[in-house]
Image 1: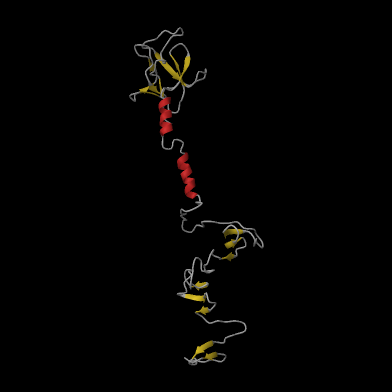
Image 2 (image 1 turned 90 degrees about the vertical axis):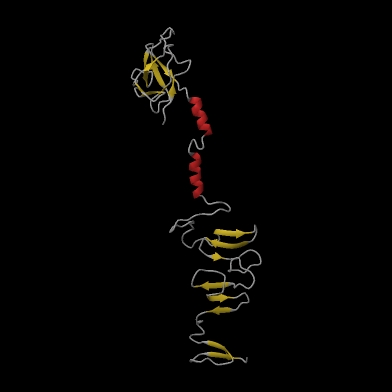
Length: 251
């Protein structure tokens, strides 16, 4: 906290109890008007020189001085008792406060909160490595298959939603291919990749096409198929095994 300026105005004079001026008189400065007040010795003149007492000028006026750090009021005594002296730089301080960029620090504080907030629309959120951007506390036990952590709607119909029980339903709005989010046309309904998920069938290990056909990079196994392999084409498989099925057709 900075020092306040006292004195130096027409109403700060060293006077007797009868109001007579006291040119050249010395006075003391106190923390209050009480009997147990502390005398303040940490005073500074306008040139930065230390003072322990005040000295009135040739007209009995008290020159301007800086009070101790943090004192907004002081009491002076030139022999007629202690009288409160108010700061004379209050107007300047108020102006600096009003015109300051962030006088209370509230803007900086608010900005720090905004940086942590999730924008309602647009914008971006920076997430530190290893941190979770959003966590939702859902009902325990069997969960809640009606409530949703995320729900997209056109106001009447529910589309893509993440239920409170963890189930995820992907249903884009409009003439788009379900499960291939945002995709249209011949992009597959469903694709499974060993790497990052995407709607393209290139590099997919399992694909359900928009015409209903299924393509898999590995062997298809089922309870009613066992280890049987299915081939089709004009020529038989080169390494036939027991249980293989070959559907022959001409070129």
